[in-house]
Image (cartoon, rainbow, N blue to C red; front, side, top):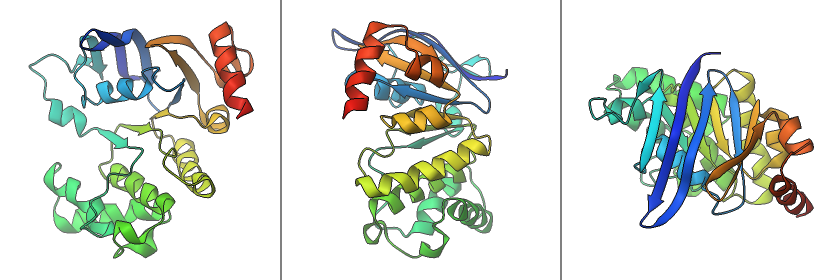
Length: 245
């Protein structure tokens, strides 16, 4: 398998508090990896370290075999290869849907306006938002805003898409529309790392599930291995509590 991102001995501390401790794992091309765990287990911090919104305290992040934490490598060109979808959408409220999906292409990738618009249209169609080009984010539901946020990230044509609990800010009836978009992207072969509390999605869509607890990877394997036949007491306890709610 072709490794896209390889994490080696990654650690992150805030002051004396160790949030990530000696994390090792790999994201392979075309793979969907779901990260699960209780609040405060380090899941979102791991994502933020991978795209360097947080600077790791130690370890290596290899992208296509190159350690991007080496000062000689450009953080900006690496980050342009990663798509990021946040919990809170992070759309520009003063811009319409189409412009939200064009602006980063123009500024970061220096694409000509017509090319950027064409690419944005393509991905707005993928997420089913092509009829809302002129709408402002505040005129859209939460589920629609998150689909625009996914289209915006896809418009950069990244190597890996990172999702940080993309449905946690949504009303329950809007969760399905976002998960369906993500499921179609997975089926199309997009490489995805998804922090989620949606166990059904992890079970149906993930190639691999990573269970984190207190800053360490406690268990990792196929959805069947981790979600149906977990080996560790801590994983069993977490799943029992999660699936009961």
